Length: 186
Image 1 (tube, helix red, strand yellow):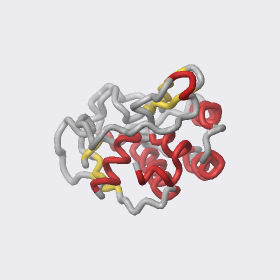
Image 2 (tube, one colour):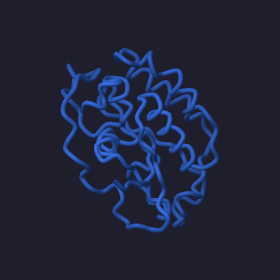
Image 3 (cartoon, one colour):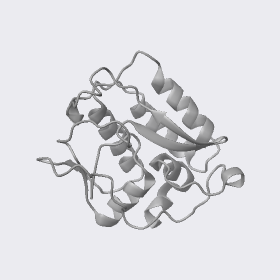
């Protein structure tokens, strides 16, 4: 499976990678605005919310994705942690994974690629998934991550399901905190 780098990637990407046994990130593309490279989608009491990692200058200048720098002019890591705590604090597996996840997510990485890799590897470790993320050796194409990976995510119990019904297209954070180790059975 070939995708772009992603900030807390979509749950569907994780499930497809687990099913396929391989996950490769496109390492030779130029950064493109949009997509999940620096954004994730979580479920909150008010509905879906996009969290975005702020990027330093150069994000619009066809910069190689591995050279995109994170901006720390705002305390976005604390803001994201508060949003995630508010959204998933009552989820069944939140207390099992939150501290270790926030420790890694709170680390200061200069580049977005490194940050995304550290947080994604943390989730793989928390779930004890024997999946390795590799990077492409050369540019493989501009549609990495655009495909429909595997089957749709089967509905599961979400924190705010009684308000909004089942919300599709959420970050792996939703599966991590709502399903825990059962994520493998999806």
